[in-house]
Amino acid sequence: MTNPQPNPPRTGPKPLPLHLATAMNGWISSRAGLPLLKNDSTAWRPEVADRAKALQDALAQNAAQQSRAQKSAHLQNPKASSEPDPFALALDREIHDRLAAFSAGVSAYRQHPYRRNLEDPPALWSSGATRLLDYGPRDGAPVLFVPSLINRAYILDLSERRSLLRWMARESGLRPLLVDWDAPGPAERRFTMSDYINGPLTTALDTAVAITGQPVPVVGYCMGGLLALALARLNPSKVSGLSLLATPWNFHAERVAQAEALARAVEAASPLLDLYGELPVDIIQSMFSALDPFLVTRKFTGFATVDPDSQAAEDFVALEDWLNDGVPLSGPVARECMGGWYGRNTPHKGLWHVGKTPIRPQEVDHPALVLVPQRDRIVPPASADALAAALPNATRESPRLGHIGMVAASRAQSDVWEPLATWLTRL
Image (cartoon, rainbow, N blue to C red; front, top):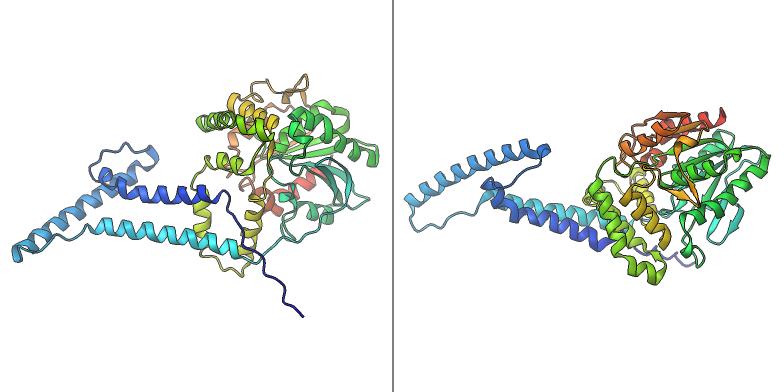
């Protein structure tokens, strides 16, 4: 009997060169910034000004003590050379230790044995790159789930212990139907947002409605929430309710400069969009990493200390595998999403259209549940709050979770899955 071949090492976190350069440049630049700290020539941000002042005071006290020690040593031995700056030595050790910990965390992730092995449920319908996956049970009330076009749909079915859809099918009696976009094929590379919404997404809704002949609730997650909103606006008689999870709306509610920078980056990538018809995954991830450049270094530095045989390690790896399994965006969608939504804030300004129809939440009067996670670093709560405030028949809840944690964390079941299922069953 032959032994099974080991899994090949992962290539992530993607794009790895960017994350390595960010870590190295960020930490090594601390050495170059030490003189500026010592002579108080840096204008500190208000949130760190007090800590910087305390550090400067400590450095001044340390320098005075070192100077006295060096003078005393020189009097005893005039030929003695000056000792190196102990603070600079400590800083060098800290830089080394942080880079080592980050490298260890990345290596532990790349070599971890976990692999997702869940089989997809059957597809009720498919066309091109899009499928409608049926999580059952067959006698349950259908609910249409719409994920983002940027990431894989299986964030809602991440693992055996972290699957919103399998839990809902098993525990609530509802019948989750998941729109699985997959990577754009030759046809989808030409798709606009309107093509996606009026084409495969509307067909998926029609398929769900045909099961019972009744309107169905629609749940949208992140970018999928905007698609779900547009779907309800364009097909009001087919939708019984609308739940929007971590859905952005006012893209300039916070971090305006970063949102506009995303738009400029897509514009700079126009030659790639024209040549390939899509925005590659690594470029998308590079753009969004700018929202929190050191997030990856913090995560993997922490992962270096996690027991590799623990459930925590497996959950971390499962989530990172999903993050590194992104899909490209079609060229027209990339321009509309990054340039229009982020750059010009078209949804909040009432300028986003699907076909010739403006998508305005004030005109969507379905019962709506808007979940705004408090710890969301991807969609600022103020951005999602703008959508909750604009919907005329909305209930807003704010779980104490992050953007991804609200659907995949250990507390997601109690804080999000159960309230969502209760709301859906009461429609």
